[in-house]
Length: 162
Image (cartoon, rainbow, N blue to C red):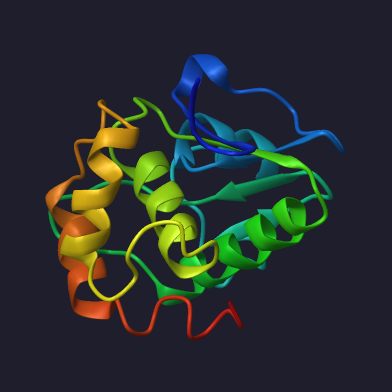
């Protein structure tokens, strides 16, 4: 688990834990976290009410994988930003983890730093990435998430009220 900003941490699957009032957790991985929390194996029907996101008071489970072709939904990022904002703004800490701690989790942290905290530039993904790279040496964003955010940078955050 690496501290990237005041009360904001990024980690991998080994840092996975249940959230609490002091440390809310974003589980940015379909397997095993979203699958366990929702109770399924394999794939989930897109019509399922928790297909994209399952929210508990201190845990946010995202059905998010990191393919080279962007399969992401704006709603996933909007729900993440709402959850992160609520916990951080009330004074709690936030851990964002994915399987390897290289792409999804640090990208979500970057997004939060740029779009809500304004701790790094928010004018473009490239500017945000340049400012974020020194904060998290293990940042290796996947092609799909980079393409998605480069295309949708202006929309992400606008839809979450951040």
